[in-house]
Every structure is written in C-alpha cells, then in structure tokens.
Image (tube, rainbow, N blue to C red; front, top):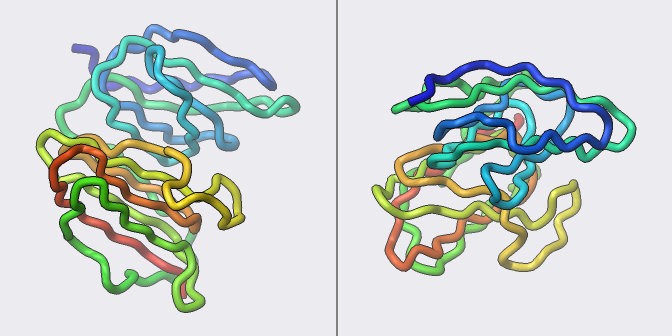
Length: 196
C-alpha cells in the first residue's frame, strides 16, 4: 500500500503527462494555476481544479492534461492510499456566506435526478458538498454546462462520480444534477453555502 505523498509538477502549454506511475485510491489537487484534466489508468478525462479530491477506487497510473495551449500549468497533488478522507477542501474567499436552506439528507430513487441551480432567489451558490451514504453504489454528478451559461439537457454532462461512503466538495455556482443509475435507492447528504 502506497501512503499519500505530495507531488509538485509543471506541465508545458498543451502538454499531456501520460501514465505517471502513481498507485493508490485517493487523488487530491491542492493547488493548480488554472483548471486542467486528469485521467486514471485508461479511464475518461475528468475536469479538475484546485481544492478538489477524488476517491477513485484503485488505480495504477495517472495522466495529467494541460488543456491551455498558451500557458504553463503548475499543480500540487496528493496521491496514494488512505483509509479515510483527511485532506481539507478549504474555502478560498472570505466573502460573507450562509448555509442554503432546504437541503440535508434524503433518498435518491433509482434513475431519479435531483437538480441544484446555482442561483436561488437571487443568491449565488459558493460551494457544495455531496456525501454518498451508500455502502456499494456510485452516485453521478452531472453539470448542465462547464461554463457560466445554463444551457444543457436534463441529464447534463457527466462531471464526477461520488463513490460509496465518500464525499465530494466543489466551490462553484454552476447548476449541477445528482443522478442515481445504480438500480437501488441511495441516501445522500447535500450541503451548500451561498453568498449573502
């Protein structure tokens, strides 16, 4: 079992750093000069940015992709194995916020979707935390768009997977959709903060 270790890497503009021999089940991007993409083993490319952690399940290689053709990318990542999540996803601004009402723990039925708009009653979301309480089933997070627009299908585009008994945190005001494709009910917990 490989313990968590920190790597500071710089990728040239447009560079793909393929198949880095990092083994583990946890990946945490602590710093990044701008959003980039990551791929575990031969899986699909996942958009990522600073302060995002991914509980991937076992992997043996990591590929980092700098999508910007004009800027160098520097990332600080933690990678390896850990039994529990202990790396924080810190708040990055000091603007006043409050908890968004009407959220908490609820069941998500099979093939059910739950949509969270980025702006509710004129207040913009700052951050969300989604916890998957299932012991065996994955929960999918889709987004209606990757940019500031709100156009998209009801299913949106697949953004991330919240693995069983794990949590995903993201600072964004983009609309997102929780989707249960597991065939069984999943209990989820959602917490959000919004700007005052």
